[in-house]
Image (cartoon, rainbow, N blue to C red; front, top):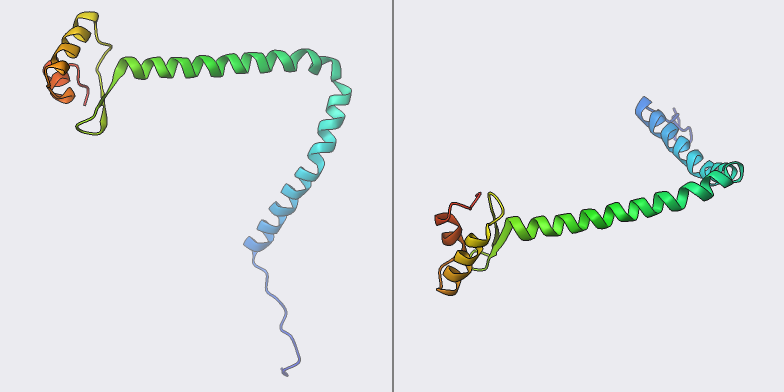
Length: 123
């Protein structure tokens, strides 16, 4: 072959497959707005009733989940400033255990040692 002749490009199956997926994804994103618009036009009344309800329920679920996770952490974990880590409890402390814990903390004991001797420390 001469210097001016160009060798044909060899395309592997993986490259063809990748190109096919790229075209399919691009097509999907080009068609999505049009299909969404058509769906909304065809089912406008149903969407007007369903969307606010779904959004309200979703917001309520998110707020409830945040509230539960905050309460769980407050009840089941204690931060130890001397170790710079959270200590996980086996269970929620009773009122009597909370009073004992606070009293011993005021006396200068370490959080880890208090929880360990009270058999509340999970790990």
